[in-house]
Length: 178
Image 1 (cartoon, rainbow, N blue to C red):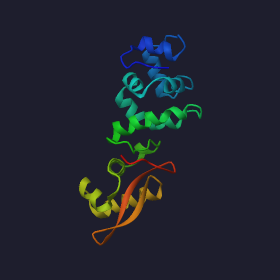
Image 2: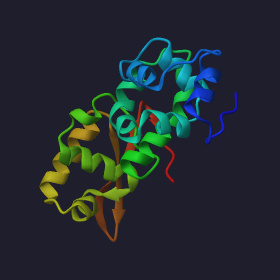
Image 3: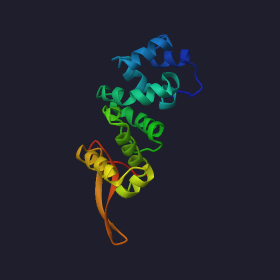
């Protein structure tokens, strides 16, 4: 089903919910709670732009990692475009993976992970410099994130010095670097 970005909620809700008129406030509440019908039908039918427009950008940024984790298996195939939209909205790039524990990370660790996702291939030293943090603290973040599978490290030699390059890691798959 093709959804036009300029459609009103009244028109869109009838397309998504089989000619039923669902009030926007009720839909938002249902999405926020991971409603077993509203969430899958919306993800399968709406474009990320439409979903974000009606759900709200701030609510999407905060809620998508948890919502994505609650999607039924049949709907997960529609999630990658929403993942990209979330990654762009939160991190300014396309390599950030929405995991339910993303907002449970400390703000500095979350900033470090977001920075690595936005600028893959950087050394720990360069990431620390960019973020204005001590090398030791950046090394601790990199080590913890690598141990938990959120990033991967690659040993490299640059100008005769050994360094670890940092790359985002997503659910056991390699993430495309843009």
